[in-house]
Image (cartoon, rainbow over the protein chains, first blue to last red):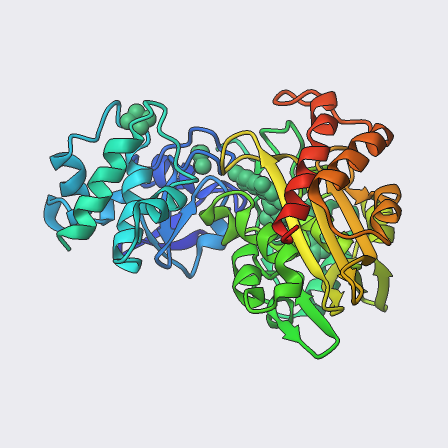
Length: 152
Length: 284
Ligand SMILES: Cc1cc2nc3c(=O)[nH]c(=O)nc-3n(C[C@H](O)[C@H](O)[C@H](O)COP(=O)(O)OP(=O)(O)OC[C@H]3O[C@@H](n4cnc5c(N)ncnc54)[C@H](O)[C@@H]3O)c2cc1C
Ligand code: FES
Ligand code: FES
């Protein structure tokens, strides 16, 4: 018997071992390769997805416990192949460097934009404590978040 | 995805069901709370258990009860939920700070207070010294009933806790003390603390320290009270510089643990600075 998951609105079935990290199922069974297993420790945020709307490192969620929850990956954030306002602001600010951290950054910042429209620069920094950018592109990422908040 | 297919995760619908499953599973079964420690077992080269009992859906483990003389916290309360619940209670500033500044926002929404206390191998747990200086007790449940014990005692026995036992609640007395949590991560946020100093004091009418609890975390493998410093503080007014000097004279009782990020001696060396910072934060 498989495990039933709801990912980006689709009902999917996984045959993985129940303790398998969700990120591995997303990538290897469902081919949703936006979330990346980088540290597998909850430190870097490259695997961030929304679980019931909350940013959650998918490397620390066993797939069995993802059942019954609404999972949204970076692939599900924007409709019809477009960009959501946060993604558009990141592009406008030329914030992307190697891109490794970006699926996670976009997930965390999309949540911030939706839940904290009054967020300050410090709030953005605090919200990104669990998203590491190895290219250290933080300043432009924060500028993009401020732009997205200002134009909301 | 190379995990053997024999593993299972049972989502317990009630406390009794969890205790039954833990009891029946024996040594190969463990509680699964936030999973932020368990899921990193492969990184630590540790084997996973063959069966986990997920306790996140048990209502009483999520309860926070604020009474006149005591606060009770269910073991599955997350760091984030605890910090929100205690914000209006200044006597618990030490615990609010511990719960709201550890790790990062996503982890704080997953990691539980019970997991923080139950993880024997985790020396840098922020809530452990915070609860030590608050004289917390814990309640342990098993199929055969409940037992209550002081947190200090629990820390000595947690690694040998018999299978089938579950940390159910944390009970914290309300004594109206001034409390503070001082931690030193390597980066400004998101890292494990190099050292933690937690303080709870009561003052007499003239502002001298009447009772003091000081707890130190992350320096040695297990957090503990700093009783010599407590005794030194009693009878004196709170003075950050003086207390830091006293701490420097007493710090040799600690043997810092070495790790890849920090050598043991450094963890001890930063203690007087953290004592200074803690006392200054109390307004002295
Ligand atoms: C990136 C990252 C950074 C972190 N930084 C910090 C930090 O700065 N400070 C800090 O304090 N912590 C930090 N943590 C650690 C985190 O707080 C602990 O991993 C967490 O508290 C463990 O709780 P959990 O609910 O996730 O436990 P789990 O991983 O579910 O369980 C951990 C252990 O406790 C046992 N257990 C859990 N609940 C109970 C119970 N009720 N009764 C008996 N046994 C139980 C489990 O069987 C297991 O052995 C960090 C974690 C991560 C991933
Ligand atoms: S891979 Fe999950 S947080 Fe780094
Ligand atoms: S853009 Fe390279 S890691 Fe962030």
